[in-house]
Length: 301
Ligand code: AMP
Image (cartoon, protein in one colour):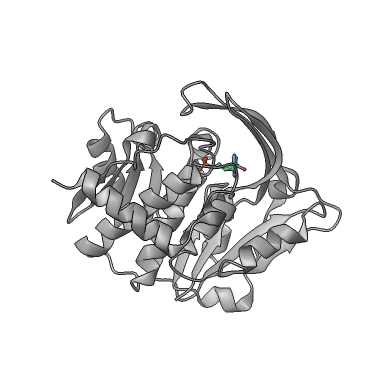
C-alpha cells in the first residue's frame, strides 16, 4: 500500500559545533519519504528548481519512492534553508530561508496519487497541506507534522488543516503554544477534542508521547553518542512511524502503534548520525532489526 508524502524539498546549509556542510539535500518531504520507504512504497510530492540534480531524484527512486510528483519549476531555484546548531546539539537557529519555488508551491498530485488511502503532510505551509487534501478522493488516514512558524504566522489556516486531518505530530513546546496549556498531556487531550484520532508529541532527545482516546504510550529516544546532524530527525520519526502504520494497512491497535513509535524512533536515531540522508542511506533492514534488539534491552522492564 502506498503512502503519499507532500512537503518541502530543500538544499540545506548546516552548521554544527564541529562541522559545516553546504548544499546538502534536505526538506521535510525528503526525510519523511526516505524514512517511510523503509516500510512501504512512497509517492513523493514537492517542487524544486532548475538547480535540482538528477542524482538527488535517483536517491529517492532507488529507495522505493515514486518521484512523478516532484515538479521541476522552469527558471526557478530550489528552496534553501540554512541552520546552525548550538553546543547542546538540540537547539538550533535558522540563519537564512530562501523560499524560491516553495513560496508559490501549489501541490499537483498526479492522477494515480489522487486515489491514495494514506497522506502525510510534512512540515510546510498549512495552505499547501489543504490544497493536497482537496485532491485526494479515497483517503482514509491523513497525518500532518507542523512547526512553531505556522502557529505564529498562519494560525487560521493551521486550525483549518487540523480540522481536516486525523493525526498530528508536533513538538512539546508547539503543543503547548497551540493550546495555551502548560502540561503536555492536557495539551494533547485538548488537541484530541478537535476531532483528531491521535496526537504524537515529540520531546526531542527525550522521546515521544502518543495520545488517542483509547491509549497513551510513551517511547524513549534511542540513546546514541554519535549525533552528527539532528536535521530531519523529526520528519524521519514521523515518516517512519506513519510508513509502518501504512504497512499494517492503517491499523491503529495497540501493537501497531507501539511498533510504529519504536520504528520511528530507530529511524530518527540513524538520521542524526550523519548529515542529510547520508546515514540513512547506509541503513538496511538488518541494521534496523539489530538496533531494535538493542532498544528492547534498554527500554523493557
Ligand atoms: P526537522 O529537523 O525535522 O525539523 O527538519 C528540517 C528540514 O526542514 C530541513 O531539511 C529544512 O530544509 C526543512 N525546513 C526548514 N524550514 C522549513 C519551512 N519553513 N518550510 C518547510 N521546510 C522547512
